[in-house]
Length: 438
Image (cartoon, rainbow, N blue to C red; front, side):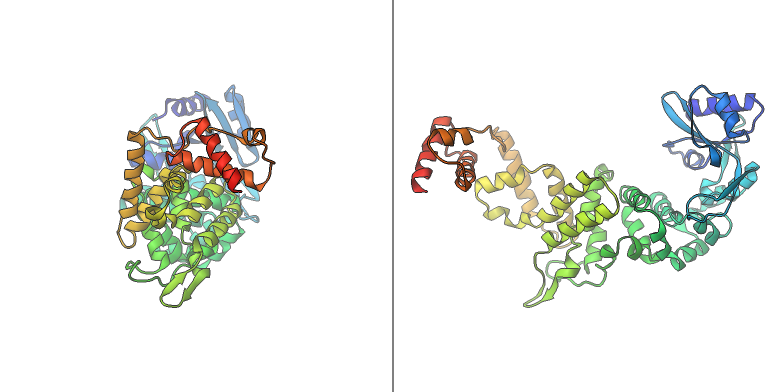
């Protein structure tokens, strides 16, 4: 338990105020997990909290929320309150300071609505959180429709908690989500994007995506992914079923050591997003040019979710390149080395492995690339050797800048990667022969 959080509780109590740990940290402590954050609920008014500590940030004082800085960390200290009206589907229109019991009843789910007294070592549970924690249930506090009216993002949060903890969503709570799933579109793209990112990097991401589909949230948040359901694939390559089933299996197969990689999770989710719009049947089912189409769609989706630009670009590259592994056996040595030296090739390789395991199961090209990387490392053969010549050298030889420059320099690098030239003099001789041919 965090000593600074306890110190804040004790400081408030010394001044005559009720104060407890609250919310997710209480849930995690009861589950024997280390909390990521510690929040405190108190009877002290915001101005009293500010007066009690030397370093505070009144981020939401109008809602009774003050950040207390202690031990180099931020701790959210909120005054017990009850809310009235949520016209924007996120913030209360009015708040009234209240009791701990009333404060618990305005929170989202029972497992997040408990208080903990670190002095007495007792849990204060007004909402049945301990019961649901023991039963493995995600249940909205009170009326589910009212809880989701207050903040529609709670529908996605219910799925994430169920996925992360391996819990079931209580029937009335699930029914309320299913009946109003389309309303999630009213939430800002940034909040949806952040929630999707957390879901994809939690231990039960695959199950979470299946829950999103079952509850109608997938079609509302990621319609391009939902469109994969029912899109058939050639059974000789994909005995597992349709495009969405293949995709969900890939996400489920991400190994624990890489579970926190948002880029890999997004690439697994979106690698075949170009298949529905490119579906055709000729000699067999085909998806012509789906990696390029999918890469364009991927970058558009991730911009819509307001995820970082560099994340979108890297995921787009993974989607665009994911089928190139079937060509590695026929690549020239220089082309293969360029392929192997791509930024974050480890993610390209892992995405290919997951793609194979969730379909035909043939890892031949995965092993080929893995062995080639080991072979090159053992031979100390650099994939990106230092340049032997540049544009200035071509000009010194009397060549005029133009399209031929790029071609000549590319040929020189090919020769270097393939071991046909190793010195500057050899490179210049090659340039002279190429120039003569041109």
